[in-house]
Image 1 (tube, rainbow, N blue to C red):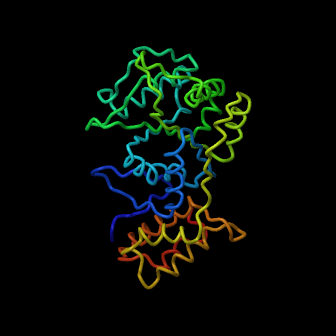
Image 2: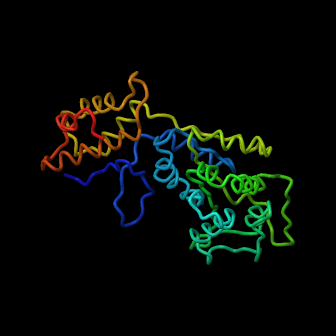
Image 3: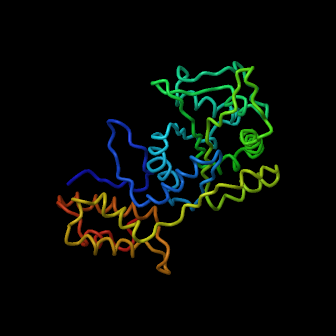
Length: 299
């Protein structure tokens, strides 16, 4: 058999040279829509239920498209930082690490990280290039953003004001000081749907109204999208004569009690377990009988 093409409970990631790649399927529509939203707006919020695939959509779906359009996505996790770590300072350091200081031209030697305008000052006085000398634009993707509201609420609120300064049209760049007025960045906040109220509470309390626009809710997979997740990576692995039946049964298996919503996280896990079950039997193909072998509770 081929290598297991499903990631189970692990998120799908952006393909890298020399590494095993996993087929990311079923989210072509969401990939197009979210990529367009990020391309055309400075600040975007992605939200959805826990385990629905937000991280996978970003890393394996959206990031490759962004890179083809002169954007450089940079994933940043703030919630697990030590409390002594400055959030804005860490974000700037992650930009430098991802792009490389040799490809960053900055006119600002020192930045007061306790200033609300520090993020604006950094971007307005900095330009970014790739190894060919072409201009690129960082996309700061703050994954699992709810974490900082839970662990560092005061710091989170101040950091939100620092991000909001990037969207403030009243801050005009001064070319004489090496600053520019280019919007050479994008910001994406990814947050769990059940924690979205924490972000909204911050936005409402601090009057950061522009951050309420450009939101994308990642919905549950539709049946046809789920079939893509099963059958496209399963080409040459699932028995040809049982593909439709197996896909139908898996989809039925992962739906809720009312037969409506699909469990996206369970879908990839079931497919991965089916592969492992067939591999242990030295079977050349996955078949319906392997789904029965998992029983009623494969977890």
